[in-house]
Length: 212
Image 1 (cartoon, rainbow, N blue to C red):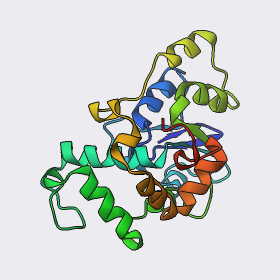
Image 2 (image 1 turned 45 degrees about the vertical axis):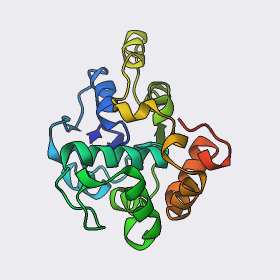
Image 3 (image 1 turned 90 degrees about the vertical axis):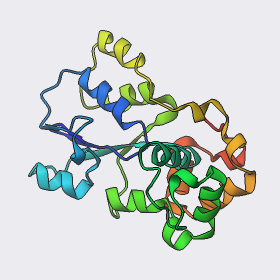
Image 4 (image 1 turned 135 degrees about the horizontal axis):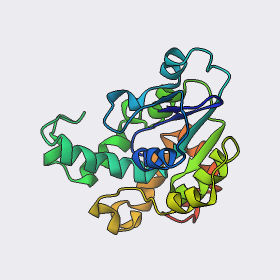
């Protein structure tokens, strides 16, 4: 989470937040609040931000938006690396699962596995004022944050050199991980995310849009 005197940036998990934090650090700005990447509070909600910085309720809200199939894939591999013994809702440990097992259960149990809970949890009923597109993160960051803070040319160059950290699973396209009907079902189960993605990206991967 980063808070200036005019905006709040929320670090939504699995949306290139650590790379975005590095971009904020390039600005050398006197932030009201900044959570380092090791701080467990970095994934705080909008309500948390308002509680931690009194008077911030009128600030603009910025968050990152990543393609939903990428988020699900990233979360699964994160759990396989960092929590292989933790049990998924199906009762099996993450270390025992293939991604196909995971996504099939997610799709078949929308009442408990909708990724819309992430947006609901972090934002509540409110939408972000600005979304940073993870697919073009540096340019999106410069465009949006530059409306609030001056970004010198040299800082822009450094920001453009920062890239999101992705695992080796990302070497394959989304189509190698998902059947077309699985991506369609995932979006159908997450109407808030789907609507936001259509508005910000202009399409969904299931409608002929680019997968990454």
